[in-house]
Image 1 (spheres, helix red, strand yellow):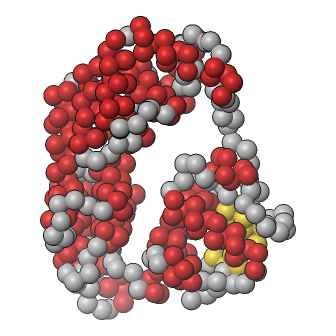
Image 2: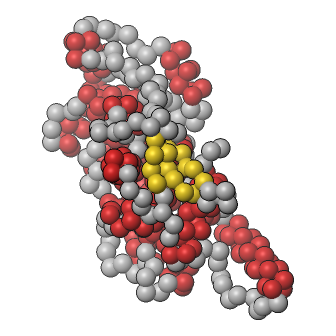
Length: 365
């Protein structure tokens, strides 16, 4: 495998991580992506050339995992690839970091102690709706406003007490911000918000951020009643059991890493259960002894990129792939390969090609 070097566009020497990275980039990034970025910073210091395989081995990840992380930082304008004349990636350039949209610091400790009964204005909500047309952006609520609402709105106060009881600890400022956001901005009625909290706690998720993510998912799907929420939560729980069963894993509870994969397929990609089952089936058929979540994720990631929404879309892709293979085989004068889908387990050589193809599509756009 060809090596790549790591340099910096402005030829700086990094002896520490930029505060901008910590303040603006690290907060929303996947933990694995953060670790890989920090390792790239470390490699920049010693100046030695490495391969993607070297980085993957260091973290005990796949080369595709490393490609995915680097692609993320390219999209965040943190890294840029440089290429050889024949368009092969030869280096990673670490770009100067930029300060992102300023965080509202008005809720510092001192300002939180000051009386301020102002609710976020209508213009704030309109601006948030423009920025994200599907989900209102979470506003910053003053502590005094939340305290006043807790006293004046008995149902909201009961929800805060309920959550504090379930969490078995005092609610943090973040907890209060998120619960107020769901109640006010997402317009969850007291019964729906109460059920949301009960549901998340029942599956072992005593985290306001997790509660927020489920609330946003329900909001996007038009769930406004407890009855609708019960149907959604039942389907959501069953998908975990289904995937584990399809892959022959003798457990009813997925690991955190497995949960993250399934959440991406079911929530982010919005695949229904039948499509996920089909991906598992193909993974097992292709690799009966080594099918795993990474393999299934490769299939579903590919289908997501090709805008698959129903099983017939997959059939169309298969037919197009078979026609392309037949055409290529005819040109070569060879027999048509017996391949049933368009995702293959990567060999070392295939991973290199995938790495190059991935970045040629994603970088410098």
